[in-house]
Length: 615
Image (cartoon, rainbow, N blue to C red; front, side):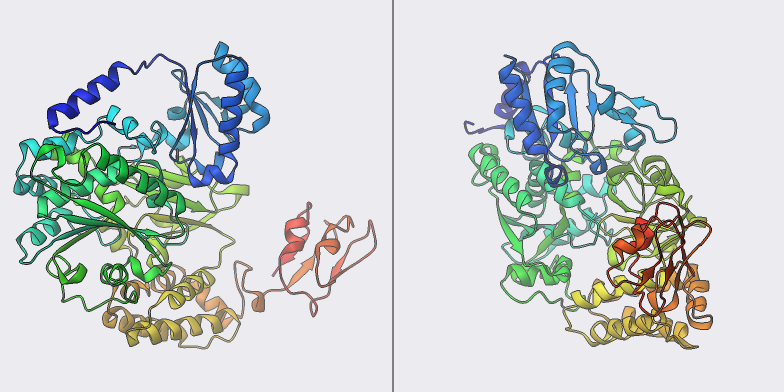
Protein backbone atom coordinates (compact mmCIF):
# COMPACT_ATOMS: atom_id res chain seq x y z
CA UNK A 1 0.00 0.00 0.00
CA UNK A 2 1.22 3.50 -0.84
CA UNK A 3 1.90 5.88 2.03
CA UNK A 4 -1.11 7.87 3.23
CA UNK A 5 0.03 11.40 4.05
CA UNK A 6 -3.14 13.21 5.17
CA UNK A 7 -6.53 12.59 6.75
CA UNK A 8 -8.14 13.48 3.42
CA UNK A 9 -5.95 10.95 1.63
CA UNK A 10 -7.06 8.28 4.12
CA UNK A 11 -10.70 9.04 3.38
CA UNK A 12 -9.98 8.74 -0.34
CA UNK A 13 -8.29 5.37 0.11
CA UNK A 14 -11.28 4.11 2.11
CA UNK A 15 -13.71 5.34 -0.54
CA UNK A 16 -11.69 3.69 -3.32
CA UNK A 17 -11.67 0.40 -1.42
CA UNK A 18 -15.43 0.58 -0.88
CA UNK A 19 -16.00 1.21 -4.60
CA UNK A 20 -14.25 -2.07 -5.35
CA UNK A 21 -16.27 -3.90 -2.72
CA UNK A 22 -19.44 -5.56 -3.98
CA UNK A 23 -21.68 -6.60 -1.04
CA UNK A 24 -23.72 -8.84 -3.35
CA UNK A 25 -20.70 -10.85 -4.47
CA UNK A 26 -20.22 -14.36 -3.17
CA UNK A 27 -17.75 -14.64 -0.31
CA UNK A 28 -16.92 -17.50 2.03
CA UNK A 29 -15.46 -16.61 5.44
CA UNK A 30 -13.95 -19.19 7.74
CA UNK A 31 -12.89 -18.74 11.35
CA UNK A 32 -9.12 -19.11 11.55
CA UNK A 33 -8.52 -18.32 15.21
CA UNK A 34 -6.41 -20.64 17.34
CA UNK A 35 -9.46 -22.65 18.48
CA UNK A 36 -10.72 -23.42 14.98
CA UNK A 37 -7.17 -24.10 13.83
CA UNK A 38 -7.16 -26.86 16.42
CA UNK A 39 -10.25 -28.27 14.68
CA UNK A 40 -8.45 -28.20 11.30
CA UNK A 41 -9.92 -25.05 9.74
CA UNK A 42 -6.82 -24.33 7.63
CA UNK A 43 -7.17 -27.65 5.83
CA UNK A 44 -10.87 -26.92 5.31
CA UNK A 45 -9.96 -23.51 3.83
CA UNK A 46 -7.39 -25.07 1.49
CA UNK A 47 -9.95 -27.65 0.39
CA UNK A 48 -12.55 -24.91 -0.24
CA UNK A 49 -10.08 -23.00 -2.41
CA UNK A 50 -9.12 -26.15 -4.31
CA UNK A 51 -12.77 -27.05 -4.87
CA UNK A 52 -13.58 -23.52 -6.09
CA UNK A 53 -10.78 -23.80 -8.60
CA UNK A 54 -11.90 -27.27 -9.62
CA UNK A 55 -15.44 -26.04 -10.24
CA UNK A 56 -14.22 -22.91 -12.08
CA UNK A 57 -15.66 -20.49 -9.53
CA UNK A 58 -14.24 -17.05 -8.78
CA UNK A 59 -15.17 -16.87 -5.08
CA UNK A 60 -12.88 -15.62 -2.34
CA UNK A 61 -12.35 -17.83 0.68
CA UNK A 62 -11.29 -15.51 3.50
CA UNK A 63 -9.61 -16.68 6.71
CA UNK A 64 -10.74 -14.36 9.48
CA UNK A 65 -10.38 -14.05 13.22
CA UNK A 66 -12.36 -15.95 15.84
CA UNK A 67 -16.18 -15.95 15.45
CA UNK A 68 -16.57 -16.72 19.17
CA UNK A 69 -18.64 -19.92 19.07
CA UNK A 70 -15.60 -22.11 19.72
CA UNK A 71 -17.66 -25.14 20.73
CA UNK A 72 -18.87 -25.56 17.14
CA UNK A 73 -15.74 -24.99 15.05
CA UNK A 74 -14.70 -24.96 12.28
CA UNK A 75 -17.22 -22.24 11.46
CA UNK A 76 -18.02 -21.15 7.89
CA UNK A 77 -20.34 -18.37 6.67
CA UNK A 78 -21.56 -18.05 3.08
CA UNK A 79 -22.13 -14.42 2.04
CA UNK A 80 -24.19 -12.47 1.10
CA UNK A 81 -26.92 -14.84 2.38
CA UNK A 82 -25.03 -15.20 5.69
CA UNK A 83 -25.64 -18.95 5.85
CA UNK A 84 -23.98 -20.17 9.05
CA UNK A 85 -22.36 -23.62 8.96
CA UNK A 86 -20.78 -25.24 12.02
CA UNK A 87 -18.47 -28.21 12.64
CA UNK A 88 -17.49 -28.23 8.98
CA UNK A 89 -15.24 -31.08 7.85
CA UNK A 90 -13.18 -31.58 4.71
CA UNK A 91 -15.71 -34.13 3.42
CA UNK A 92 -18.42 -31.42 3.52
CA UNK A 93 -16.54 -29.09 1.16
CA UNK A 94 -17.71 -30.43 -2.24
CA UNK A 95 -21.38 -30.07 -1.24
CA UNK A 96 -20.80 -26.60 0.23
CA UNK A 97 -19.29 -25.40 -3.04
CA UNK A 98 -21.52 -27.18 -5.55
CA UNK A 99 -24.80 -26.80 -3.67
CA UNK A 100 -24.64 -23.77 -1.36
CA UNK A 101 -22.13 -21.47 -3.06
CA UNK A 102 -23.19 -22.32 -6.61
CA UNK A 103 -26.95 -22.71 -6.15
CA UNK A 104 -27.90 -21.34 -2.75
CA UNK A 105 -29.03 -24.74 -1.52
CA UNK A 106 -28.85 -25.03 2.27
CA UNK A 107 -27.20 -28.09 3.81
CA UNK A 108 -29.38 -28.88 6.83
CA UNK A 109 -26.78 -31.18 8.39
CA UNK A 110 -24.33 -28.29 8.81
CA UNK A 111 -26.77 -25.82 10.35
CA UNK A 112 -26.88 -25.15 14.07
CA UNK A 113 -29.61 -27.24 15.70
CA UNK A 114 -31.26 -26.03 18.88
CA UNK A 115 -30.74 -28.82 21.49
CA UNK A 116 -34.21 -28.29 22.99
CA UNK A 117 -36.51 -27.54 20.03
CA UNK A 118 -34.36 -29.52 17.52
CA UNK A 119 -35.01 -26.75 15.01
CA UNK A 120 -32.21 -25.64 12.71
CA UNK A 121 -31.03 -22.02 12.49
CA UNK A 122 -29.94 -20.52 9.18
CA UNK A 123 -28.12 -17.29 10.10
CA UNK A 124 -25.45 -16.55 12.68
CA UNK A 125 -27.41 -13.75 14.37
CA UNK A 126 -30.35 -16.12 15.00
CA UNK A 127 -28.27 -18.70 16.86
CA UNK A 128 -29.10 -18.39 20.61
CA UNK A 129 -25.41 -18.05 21.42
CA UNK A 130 -25.27 -14.82 19.39
CA UNK A 131 -28.80 -13.45 19.77
CA UNK A 132 -28.30 -11.27 22.84
CA UNK A 133 -24.75 -10.27 22.11
CA UNK A 134 -23.69 -6.74 21.19
CA UNK A 135 -20.42 -7.29 19.35
CA UNK A 136 -18.99 -3.79 19.02
CA UNK A 137 -15.34 -4.61 19.63
CA UNK A 138 -15.36 -8.27 18.60
CA UNK A 139 -17.90 -8.12 15.77
CA UNK A 140 -15.52 -7.36 12.90
CA UNK A 141 -13.45 -10.46 13.67
CA UNK A 142 -15.68 -12.56 11.45
CA UNK A 143 -15.38 -10.32 8.37
CA UNK A 144 -11.80 -9.11 8.07
CA UNK A 145 -8.58 -10.89 7.22
CA UNK A 146 -6.30 -9.76 10.08
CA UNK A 147 -3.26 -9.95 7.81
CA UNK A 148 -4.64 -7.33 5.38
CA UNK A 149 -4.77 -3.67 6.44
CA UNK A 150 -7.13 -3.02 3.51
CA UNK A 151 -9.83 -5.10 5.21
CA UNK A 152 -9.58 -2.90 8.31
CA UNK A 153 -9.63 0.31 6.26
CA UNK A 154 -12.73 -0.69 4.32
CA UNK A 155 -14.76 -0.98 7.55
CA UNK A 156 -13.63 2.48 8.63
CA UNK A 157 -10.37 1.58 10.30
CA UNK A 158 -8.09 4.49 11.27
CA UNK A 159 -10.96 6.98 10.76
CA UNK A 160 -10.84 7.71 14.51
CA UNK A 161 -7.08 8.33 14.26
CA UNK A 162 -7.58 10.76 11.36
CA UNK A 163 -10.28 12.58 13.33
CA UNK A 164 -8.02 12.74 16.38
CA UNK A 165 -5.03 14.22 14.56
CA UNK A 166 -6.97 16.61 12.34
CA UNK A 167 -9.77 17.80 14.61
CA UNK A 168 -8.95 17.19 18.28
CA UNK A 169 -6.47 18.40 20.85
CA UNK A 170 -4.85 15.92 23.26
CA UNK A 171 -6.97 17.37 26.06
CA UNK A 172 -10.08 16.96 23.88
CA UNK A 173 -9.33 13.27 23.37
CA UNK A 174 -8.88 12.72 27.11
CA UNK A 175 -12.10 14.62 27.83
CA UNK A 176 -14.02 12.42 25.39
CA UNK A 177 -12.68 9.21 26.91
CA UNK A 178 -13.52 10.48 30.42
CA UNK A 179 -17.01 11.49 29.30
CA UNK A 180 -17.54 8.02 27.78
CA UNK A 181 -16.84 6.43 31.17
CA UNK A 182 -14.43 3.86 29.71
CA UNK A 183 -13.02 1.65 32.48
CA UNK A 184 -10.03 -0.64 32.08
CA UNK A 185 -10.99 -4.11 30.87
CA UNK A 186 -7.95 -5.81 32.36
CA UNK A 187 -9.28 -6.36 35.87
CA UNK A 188 -9.17 -3.30 38.09
CA UNK A 189 -11.76 -1.31 36.16
CA UNK A 190 -9.95 1.99 36.71
CA UNK A 191 -11.23 4.93 34.65
CA UNK A 192 -9.08 5.09 31.50
CA UNK A 193 -9.53 8.84 30.96
CA UNK A 194 -8.38 9.71 34.49
CA UNK A 195 -5.32 7.50 34.03
CA UNK A 196 -4.50 9.21 30.73
CA UNK A 197 -4.98 12.65 32.27
CA UNK A 198 -2.61 11.83 35.12
CA UNK A 199 0.07 10.69 32.70
CA UNK A 200 -0.29 13.75 30.47
CA UNK A 201 0.17 16.04 33.48
CA UNK A 202 3.10 14.06 34.88
CA UNK A 203 6.61 15.47 34.54
CA UNK A 204 9.27 13.53 32.67
CA UNK A 205 9.90 12.20 29.21
CA UNK A 206 9.71 10.12 27.17
CA UNK A 207 6.23 8.86 27.98
CA UNK A 208 4.98 5.40 27.11
CA UNK A 209 1.73 3.59 26.31
CA UNK A 210 1.52 -0.16 26.76
CA UNK A 211 -1.07 -2.75 25.77
CA UNK A 212 -1.27 -5.65 28.22
CA UNK A 213 -1.93 -8.87 26.28
CA UNK A 214 -0.42 -11.20 28.89
CA UNK A 215 -3.76 -12.86 29.80
CA UNK A 216 -2.71 -15.66 32.12
CA UNK A 217 -6.11 -16.51 33.64
CA UNK A 218 -7.14 -20.18 33.34
CA UNK A 219 -9.89 -20.49 30.74
CA UNK A 220 -9.48 -16.93 29.41
CA UNK A 221 -8.59 -16.18 25.79
CA UNK A 222 -10.46 -12.97 24.90
CA UNK A 223 -7.35 -10.87 24.42
CA UNK A 224 -5.69 -13.57 22.36
CA UNK A 225 -8.62 -13.71 19.95
CA UNK A 226 -8.74 -9.92 19.64
CA UNK A 227 -5.01 -9.69 18.93
CA UNK A 228 -5.27 -12.51 16.40
CA UNK A 229 -8.45 -11.31 14.72
CA UNK A 230 -8.34 -7.51 14.73
CA UNK A 231 -4.85 -6.27 15.64
CA UNK A 232 -5.30 -2.88 13.94
CA UNK A 233 -8.10 -1.91 16.35
CA UNK A 234 -5.62 -2.23 19.23
CA UNK A 235 -2.89 -0.36 17.37
CA UNK A 236 -5.25 2.46 16.41
CA UNK A 237 -6.39 2.83 20.02
CA UNK A 238 -2.79 2.95 21.23
CA UNK A 239 -1.83 5.65 18.71
CA UNK A 240 -4.78 7.79 19.84
CA UNK A 241 -3.80 7.26 23.48
CA UNK A 242 -0.19 8.14 22.73
CA UNK A 243 -1.27 11.39 21.07
CA UNK A 244 -3.43 12.20 24.09
CA UNK A 245 -0.68 11.80 26.71
CA UNK A 246 2.27 12.92 24.58
CA UNK A 247 4.00 9.55 24.16
CA UNK A 248 6.32 8.69 21.30
CA UNK A 249 6.83 5.00 22.01
CA UNK A 250 4.67 2.05 22.96
CA UNK A 251 4.79 -1.67 23.69
CA UNK A 252 2.41 -4.57 23.27
CA UNK A 253 3.21 -7.15 25.95
CA UNK A 254 2.05 -10.55 24.64
CA UNK A 255 2.30 -14.01 26.09
CA UNK A 256 4.94 -16.05 24.29
CA UNK A 257 2.35 -18.84 24.19
CA UNK A 258 0.34 -16.77 21.68
CA UNK A 259 2.39 -17.22 18.46
CA UNK A 260 -0.49 -16.41 16.09
CA UNK A 261 -1.25 -13.19 17.97
CA UNK A 262 2.42 -12.20 17.81
CA UNK A 263 2.51 -12.93 14.07
CA UNK A 264 -0.61 -10.91 13.27
CA UNK A 265 0.43 -8.00 15.48
CA UNK A 266 3.86 -7.94 13.82
CA UNK A 267 2.27 -7.90 10.37
CA UNK A 268 -0.20 -5.19 11.39
CA UNK A 269 2.52 -2.94 12.81
CA UNK A 270 4.57 -3.33 9.64
CA UNK A 271 1.54 -2.59 7.41
CA UNK A 272 0.57 0.47 9.47
CA UNK A 273 4.10 1.85 9.18
CA UNK A 274 4.16 1.28 5.44
CA UNK A 275 0.83 3.10 5.10
CA UNK A 276 2.04 6.11 7.08
CA UNK A 277 -0.32 5.38 9.98
CA UNK A 278 2.46 4.55 12.43
CA UNK A 279 6.01 5.80 12.83
CA UNK A 280 7.33 9.21 11.80
CA UNK A 281 4.93 12.08 11.03
CA UNK A 282 1.71 10.07 11.11
CA UNK A 283 -0.75 11.19 8.41
CA UNK A 284 1.57 14.05 7.56
CA UNK A 285 1.41 15.65 11.02
CA UNK A 286 4.27 16.39 13.40
CA UNK A 287 3.12 13.54 15.65
CA UNK A 288 5.37 10.45 15.64
CA UNK A 289 4.82 7.21 17.49
CA UNK A 290 6.19 3.68 17.24
CA UNK A 291 5.15 0.33 18.74
CA UNK A 292 7.31 -2.63 19.78
CA UNK A 293 6.24 -6.15 20.69
CA UNK A 294 7.56 -7.70 23.88
CA UNK A 295 6.97 -11.40 24.45
CA UNK A 296 6.40 -12.45 28.05
CA UNK A 297 8.00 -15.48 29.63
CA UNK A 298 4.82 -17.12 30.91
CA UNK A 299 4.70 -15.67 34.44
CA UNK A 300 1.13 -14.95 35.55
CA UNK A 301 2.32 -12.18 37.86
CA UNK A 302 3.60 -10.20 34.85
CA UNK A 303 0.00 -9.28 34.13
CA UNK A 304 0.40 -6.91 37.11
CA UNK A 305 1.51 -3.48 35.94
CA UNK A 306 4.79 -2.97 37.79
CA UNK A 307 5.86 -6.61 37.26
CA UNK A 308 5.11 -6.15 33.56
CA UNK A 309 7.31 -3.03 33.47
CA UNK A 310 10.13 -4.97 35.13
CA UNK A 311 9.79 -7.74 32.55
CA UNK A 312 10.01 -5.31 29.61
CA UNK A 313 13.08 -3.75 31.23
CA UNK A 314 14.74 -7.17 31.32
CA UNK A 315 14.41 -7.74 35.06
CA UNK A 316 12.57 -10.42 37.02
CA UNK A 317 8.81 -9.89 36.92
CA UNK A 318 8.24 -8.71 40.49
CA UNK A 319 5.75 -6.04 41.59
CA UNK A 320 6.56 -2.95 43.59
CA UNK A 321 4.64 -1.00 46.20
CA UNK A 322 1.52 0.73 44.91
CA UNK A 323 2.33 4.13 46.34
CA UNK A 324 4.49 4.56 43.21
CA UNK A 325 1.98 5.37 40.46
CA UNK A 326 2.65 4.20 36.91
CA UNK A 327 1.22 7.37 35.40
CA UNK A 328 4.12 9.22 37.03
CA UNK A 329 6.81 6.54 37.24
CA UNK A 330 6.08 3.49 35.15
CA UNK A 331 8.30 1.92 32.50
CA UNK A 332 11.91 2.97 33.17
CA UNK A 333 10.47 5.30 35.82
CA UNK A 334 8.82 7.43 33.15
CA UNK A 335 5.11 8.40 32.90
CA UNK A 336 3.28 5.38 31.49
CA UNK A 337 -0.26 4.41 30.57
CA UNK A 338 -0.95 0.68 30.70
CA UNK A 339 -4.31 -0.64 29.52
CA UNK A 340 -5.32 -4.10 28.42
CA UNK A 341 -5.82 -4.76 24.69
CA UNK A 342 -9.63 -4.76 24.91
CA UNK A 343 -9.55 -1.31 26.50
CA UNK A 344 -7.44 0.04 23.63
CA UNK A 345 -9.80 -1.52 21.06
CA UNK A 346 -12.69 0.45 22.58
CA UNK A 347 -10.96 3.79 22.01
CA UNK A 348 -11.50 4.10 18.21
CA UNK A 349 -15.22 3.39 18.73
CA UNK A 350 -15.51 6.18 21.29
CA UNK A 351 -13.68 8.72 19.13
CA UNK A 352 -15.55 7.78 15.95
CA UNK A 353 -19.07 7.57 17.37
CA UNK A 354 -18.76 9.86 20.36
CA UNK A 355 -18.97 9.59 24.13
CA UNK A 356 -22.71 10.28 24.12
CA UNK A 357 -23.32 7.18 21.98
CA UNK A 358 -21.03 5.07 24.18
CA UNK A 359 -22.86 6.26 27.29
CA UNK A 360 -26.10 4.70 26.06
CA UNK A 361 -24.58 1.22 26.48
CA UNK A 362 -24.10 -0.48 29.84
CA UNK A 363 -24.92 0.55 33.40
CA UNK A 364 -24.49 3.77 35.35
CA UNK A 365 -21.00 2.92 36.55
CA UNK A 366 -19.90 0.51 33.82
CA UNK A 367 -20.25 1.69 30.25
CA UNK A 368 -19.91 -0.19 26.99
CA UNK A 369 -19.59 -3.90 26.39
CA UNK A 370 -17.37 -6.63 27.79
CA UNK A 371 -15.94 -9.73 26.14
CA UNK A 372 -16.12 -12.87 28.28
CA UNK A 373 -14.79 -16.37 27.78
CA UNK A 374 -17.60 -18.71 28.74
CA UNK A 375 -16.16 -22.11 29.64
CA UNK A 376 -16.58 -25.03 32.01
CA UNK A 377 -19.68 -27.17 32.56
CA UNK A 378 -21.80 -25.44 29.94
CA UNK A 379 -23.25 -26.50 26.59
CA UNK A 380 -22.03 -23.56 24.49
CA UNK A 381 -18.45 -22.61 25.22
CA UNK A 382 -16.79 -19.68 23.52
CA UNK A 383 -16.35 -15.92 23.52
CA UNK A 384 -19.28 -13.57 23.99
CA UNK A 385 -19.51 -9.79 23.94
CA UNK A 386 -22.41 -8.36 25.90
CA UNK A 387 -23.48 -4.93 27.17
CA UNK A 388 -22.54 -4.28 30.78
CA UNK A 389 -25.48 -5.08 33.02
CA UNK A 390 -26.62 -8.30 31.37
CA UNK A 391 -27.47 -10.88 34.01
CA UNK A 392 -25.56 -14.06 34.74
CA UNK A 393 -28.74 -16.02 34.02
CA UNK A 394 -28.98 -14.61 30.49
CA UNK A 395 -25.32 -15.36 29.86
CA UNK A 396 -25.31 -18.90 31.24
CA UNK A 397 -28.74 -20.17 30.20
CA UNK A 398 -29.66 -18.13 27.13
CA UNK A 399 -26.26 -17.82 25.46
CA UNK A 400 -24.46 -20.71 27.11
CA UNK A 401 -27.36 -23.09 26.60
CA UNK A 402 -27.38 -24.23 30.23
CA UNK A 403 -25.62 -27.15 31.87
CA UNK A 404 -24.90 -30.33 29.86
CA UNK A 405 -26.18 -33.82 30.61
CA UNK A 406 -29.18 -32.53 32.55
CA UNK A 407 -27.07 -31.56 35.53
CA UNK A 408 -27.85 -28.65 37.86
CA UNK A 409 -26.03 -25.32 37.87
CA UNK A 410 -24.02 -24.76 41.03
CA UNK A 411 -21.73 -21.75 40.64
CA UNK A 412 -19.87 -19.53 38.23
CA UNK A 413 -16.41 -18.23 38.94
CA UNK A 414 -15.69 -14.82 37.41
CA UNK A 415 -12.52 -12.77 37.25
CA UNK A 416 -9.86 -15.41 36.81
CA UNK A 417 -8.09 -17.36 39.60
CA UNK A 418 -8.47 -14.40 41.97
CA UNK A 419 -12.19 -14.07 41.35
CA UNK A 420 -15.06 -15.31 43.45
CA UNK A 421 -17.58 -18.11 43.01
CA UNK A 422 -21.17 -16.91 42.61
CA UNK A 423 -24.05 -19.27 43.56
CA UNK A 424 -27.38 -20.00 41.87
CA UNK A 425 -29.43 -17.60 44.00
CA UNK A 426 -27.43 -14.70 42.49
CA UNK A 427 -27.96 -15.68 38.86
CA UNK A 428 -30.04 -12.55 38.26
CA UNK A 429 -27.11 -10.34 39.23
CA UNK A 430 -26.33 -7.72 36.55
CA UNK A 431 -22.73 -8.18 35.43
CA UNK A 432 -20.68 -5.03 35.83
CA UNK A 433 -17.59 -3.96 37.76
CA UNK A 434 -19.41 -2.80 40.89
CA UNK A 435 -22.07 -5.52 41.23
CA UNK A 436 -19.51 -8.32 40.96
CA UNK A 437 -17.32 -6.64 43.60
CA UNK A 438 -20.30 -6.33 45.94
CA UNK A 439 -20.86 -10.11 45.98
CA UNK A 440 -17.19 -10.94 46.58
CA UNK A 441 -16.03 -11.47 43.02
CA UNK A 442 -14.57 -9.29 40.28
CA UNK A 443 -14.71 -8.62 36.55
CA UNK A 444 -11.06 -9.44 36.03
CA UNK A 445 -10.12 -9.76 32.39
CA UNK A 446 -13.40 -11.54 31.68
CA UNK A 447 -13.12 -15.25 32.40
CA UNK A 448 -16.27 -17.13 33.38
CA UNK A 449 -15.97 -20.74 34.53
CA UNK A 450 -19.31 -22.50 35.02
CA UNK A 451 -19.63 -25.37 37.53
CA UNK A 452 -22.35 -27.98 37.94
CA UNK A 453 -23.51 -29.93 40.99
CA UNK A 454 -20.63 -32.37 40.59
CA UNK A 455 -18.13 -29.63 41.45
CA UNK A 456 -16.75 -29.57 44.98
CA UNK A 457 -16.41 -25.95 46.03
CA UNK A 458 -13.69 -26.70 48.58
CA UNK A 459 -11.69 -28.44 45.86
CA UNK A 460 -12.34 -25.51 43.49
CA UNK A 461 -10.93 -23.07 46.04
CA UNK A 462 -7.95 -25.36 46.53
CA UNK A 463 -7.32 -25.51 42.77
CA UNK A 464 -7.17 -21.74 42.41
CA UNK A 465 -5.04 -21.31 45.54
CA UNK A 466 -2.61 -23.89 44.17
CA UNK A 467 -2.41 -21.96 40.89
CA UNK A 468 -1.82 -18.67 42.70
CA UNK A 469 0.80 -20.17 44.98
CA UNK A 470 2.74 -21.46 41.98
CA UNK A 471 2.44 -18.13 40.16
CA UNK A 472 3.33 -15.91 43.13
CA UNK A 473 6.68 -14.20 42.60
CA UNK A 474 7.46 -14.73 46.30
CA UNK A 475 8.64 -11.17 46.90
CA UNK A 476 6.29 -10.30 49.77
CA UNK A 477 5.65 -12.45 52.84
CA UNK A 478 1.83 -12.13 53.03
CA UNK A 479 1.39 -13.58 49.56
CA UNK A 480 4.28 -16.04 49.60
CA UNK A 481 3.53 -17.56 53.00
CA UNK A 482 -0.15 -16.74 53.40
CA UNK A 483 -1.35 -18.29 50.15
CA UNK A 484 0.79 -21.37 50.79
CA UNK A 485 -0.65 -21.83 54.28
CA UNK A 486 -4.22 -21.39 53.02
CA UNK A 487 -3.61 -24.01 50.36
CA UNK A 488 -2.20 -26.43 52.96
CA UNK A 489 -5.34 -26.04 55.08
CA UNK A 490 -7.52 -26.72 52.05
CA UNK A 491 -5.38 -29.79 51.23
CA UNK A 492 -6.06 -31.13 54.73
CA UNK A 493 -9.81 -30.47 54.47
CA UNK A 494 -10.04 -32.28 51.13
CA UNK A 495 -7.98 -35.17 52.51
CA UNK A 496 -10.35 -35.67 55.44
CA UNK A 497 -7.91 -34.11 57.92
CA UNK A 498 -9.79 -30.89 58.46
CA UNK A 499 -10.24 -29.64 62.02
CA UNK A 500 -12.73 -27.46 63.85
CA UNK A 501 -11.60 -23.87 63.48
CA UNK A 502 -10.03 -24.32 60.02
CA UNK A 503 -12.68 -22.18 58.35
CA UNK A 504 -12.17 -19.37 60.85
CA UNK A 505 -8.42 -19.66 60.35
CA UNK A 506 -8.82 -19.41 56.57
CA UNK A 507 -10.84 -16.22 56.99
CA UNK A 508 -8.25 -14.79 59.40
CA UNK A 509 -5.31 -15.50 57.07
CA UNK A 510 -7.29 -14.10 54.13
CA UNK A 511 -7.48 -10.72 55.83
CA UNK A 512 -3.71 -10.60 56.30
CA UNK A 513 -2.97 -11.72 52.73
CA UNK A 514 -5.41 -9.23 51.20
CA UNK A 515 -4.26 -6.29 53.33
CA UNK A 516 -0.53 -6.93 53.28
CA UNK A 517 0.32 -8.09 49.76
CA UNK A 518 2.25 -5.82 47.40
CA UNK A 519 0.16 -6.43 44.29
CA UNK A 520 -3.27 -7.53 43.15
CA UNK A 521 -2.25 -11.19 42.87
CA UNK A 522 -1.96 -11.50 46.64
CA UNK A 523 -4.54 -8.82 47.34
CA UNK A 524 -7.27 -10.75 45.57
CA UNK A 525 -5.95 -14.31 46.14
CA UNK A 526 -8.35 -14.97 49.07
CA UNK A 527 -11.45 -14.32 46.89
CA UNK A 528 -12.02 -17.96 45.83
CA UNK A 529 -11.76 -19.08 49.45
CA UNK A 530 -13.85 -16.31 50.99
CA UNK A 531 -16.61 -16.56 48.37
CA UNK A 532 -16.89 -20.35 48.67
CA UNK A 533 -16.98 -20.07 52.47
CA UNK A 534 -19.65 -17.35 52.22
CA UNK A 535 -21.95 -19.19 49.80
CA UNK A 536 -21.02 -22.87 50.34
CA UNK A 537 -20.05 -23.06 54.01
CA UNK A 538 -22.10 -26.23 54.39
CA UNK A 539 -19.65 -28.04 52.09
CA UNK A 540 -16.72 -27.04 54.27
CA UNK A 541 -18.59 -28.29 57.33
CA UNK A 542 -19.48 -31.58 55.61
CA UNK A 543 -15.79 -32.14 54.83
CA UNK A 544 -14.61 -31.29 58.35
CA UNK A 545 -17.39 -32.59 60.63
CA UNK A 546 -18.84 -35.46 58.60
CA UNK A 547 -15.71 -36.44 56.62
CA UNK A 548 -17.88 -36.37 53.52
CA UNK A 549 -17.56 -34.65 50.14
CA UNK A 550 -21.16 -33.89 49.01
CA UNK A 551 -20.10 -33.55 45.36
CA UNK A 552 -18.23 -36.86 45.37
CA UNK A 553 -14.92 -35.32 44.26
CA UNK A 554 -12.42 -35.50 47.13
CA UNK A 555 -10.99 -39.02 46.87
CA UNK A 556 -10.19 -39.46 50.56
CA UNK A 557 -13.82 -38.82 51.49
CA UNK A 558 -15.68 -41.00 48.98
CA UNK A 559 -16.18 -44.66 48.16
CA UNK A 560 -17.19 -46.31 44.89
CA UNK A 561 -19.65 -49.18 44.69
CA UNK A 562 -21.80 -50.85 42.04
CA UNK A 563 -25.59 -50.98 42.05
CA UNK A 564 -26.26 -54.69 41.50
CA UNK A 565 -29.72 -54.03 40.07
CA UNK A 566 -28.41 -51.67 37.38
CA UNK A 567 -25.21 -53.54 36.52
CA UNK A 568 -25.61 -55.78 33.43
CA UNK A 569 -22.20 -57.38 33.65
CA UNK A 570 -21.04 -55.83 30.38
CA UNK A 571 -17.48 -55.74 31.81
CA UNK A 572 -16.64 -52.31 30.38
CA UNK A 573 -15.79 -50.92 33.82
CA UNK A 574 -13.44 -53.79 34.63
CA UNK A 575 -11.62 -53.30 31.32
CA UNK A 576 -10.94 -49.60 31.95
CA UNK A 577 -9.93 -50.03 35.59
CA UNK A 578 -6.13 -49.64 35.53
CA UNK A 579 -5.59 -51.16 38.99
CA UNK A 580 -7.88 -54.19 38.66
CA UNK A 581 -10.22 -53.14 41.45
CA UNK A 582 -13.42 -54.32 39.69
CA UNK A 583 -14.30 -58.01 39.70
CA UNK A 584 -17.14 -60.09 38.31
CA UNK A 585 -18.25 -62.46 35.59
CA UNK A 586 -19.80 -61.54 32.28
CA UNK A 587 -23.55 -60.77 32.47
CA UNK A 588 -23.40 -60.76 36.28
CA UNK A 589 -23.23 -57.82 38.66
CA UNK A 590 -19.68 -56.67 39.42
CA UNK A 591 -18.14 -55.44 42.68
CA UNK A 592 -15.43 -52.89 43.50
CA UNK A 593 -12.59 -53.66 45.91
CA UNK A 594 -12.49 -50.47 47.99
CA UNK A 595 -8.93 -51.07 49.23
CA UNK A 596 -7.59 -51.26 45.66
CA UNK A 597 -9.79 -48.56 44.09
CA UNK A 598 -8.01 -45.24 43.40
CA UNK A 599 -11.26 -43.27 42.70
CA UNK A 600 -9.99 -42.27 39.26
CA UNK A 601 -13.50 -42.12 37.82
CA UNK A 602 -12.77 -44.17 34.69
CA UNK A 603 -15.49 -46.68 35.58
CA UNK A 604 -18.10 -43.92 35.90
CA UNK A 605 -17.23 -42.57 32.47
CA UNK A 606 -17.40 -46.01 30.87
CA UNK A 607 -20.64 -47.20 32.48
CA UNK A 608 -23.64 -46.81 30.17
CA UNK A 609 -26.16 -47.86 32.80
CA UNK A 610 -25.39 -45.36 35.59
CA UNK A 611 -24.56 -48.28 37.87
CA UNK A 612 -21.52 -46.80 39.64
CA UNK A 613 -22.43 -45.21 42.97
CA UNK A 614 -20.32 -42.57 44.69
CA UNK A 615 -20.87 -41.97 48.41
